[in-house]
Length: 341
Image (cartoon, rainbow, N blue to C red; front, side, top):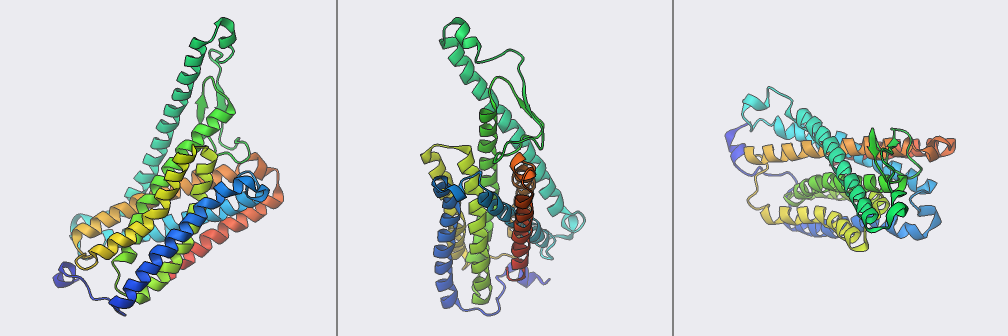
């Protein structure tokens, strides 16, 4: 690729600044609305039998959303990361001599696992300390029933209760199943939000810097679809974590505004931002790779495996079939949207 293209903003085909600006404002409103609706459904559904977090409809819809997240990582983020980190505008050494995108994505997934393990252990120990404080404040023998020395409550992969997220090789001392699953839901919801937010900024930015209506129109549809179902999956995790109203609202709002915020930032910097500059390519490639690793891990381990290995799913053949169909539909449709995005 010529140096002039790498050092300057490349002219886009179908460029129309006025129409593109209107479409960007439409995109901000539409993506914000679909994100709010998607993440709000699990919270509103608490009062509706069909949409409760342990209902069959919720699990089937969550499987569809998990497929969307999985395809986002594999089909959208990872190829884009590879494209950025192998761009001809980057020096041949080291970028063309090692598969950085796959390596960084792998490390992102492994670090996500490490964060989950450490966070779960931290919250477990925090729960135990609270129980011990109660024990110290209670009278004699009555408090001893709260903690049985040496008691271990183990969860093995595949043994989660219905509607729960799995504990993979984790154990806890001195508190029950509800506390343990609650800890797991807290960790999963926070790590998933981190993965979602980290890539939402980038995809919003890519729309915001574009001057081509031919690029923005299909992106608008793809991102709205993506935002709705990603919000639904995240909302389900936050709902299961049983945060306080303020905490849940803050997490929901943070998710809803991230992609529109990325679009807004893209609009501001579009006049001087050069997506072909080496610095922009490296930053975008690394962030996309990390996001891909986090999303693939979360989709496979904390969403798909957790629900498909639950007792409710294993005991209901019809629900299994419907959920598998939903999973493949979600992944397939999100992958198909790569044609336009």
